[in-house]
Length: 186
Image: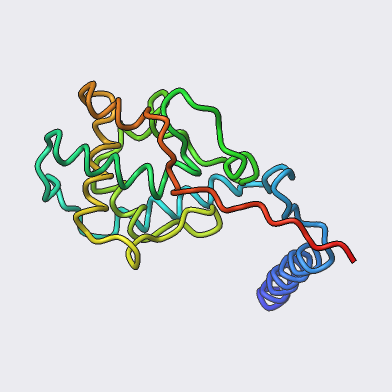
């Protein structure tokens, strides 16, 4: 009787695994940006992210001063590296952000991440978040730059008018636009 029960459990596990394999390999799984999320996708992704972030060391308080010099440095880093996806205050969402799943949060409009500690934002910016489009900046920005943008975002609801002005200035955030090249006619 017990042996039949164990065999039944093993067969059940194998059938579930085979069904999941069939679902993903035959094109039934929603993989396009416009598709709705899979069952439990958000719950599992957030749970895994929160568990991983909570596992590492937390630097609190941040190793940079909380002042306008730091916030201005963070604003510069943000405009050059983050704004294309996360947006600038009072500006429309970029075409890149419109085409992403999950949608990147608007970090400077509304609540953003002001309720997250700076160390958590630092971890996300440094390491990136898989399957979200959030890149890891540990190879392109130094620790000070990542901390500057992290404390800027953690304190975005408390920044001075001068820092807000830098974030809302209409200067290009990604450098000069590339020239339009039209194909040669044959």
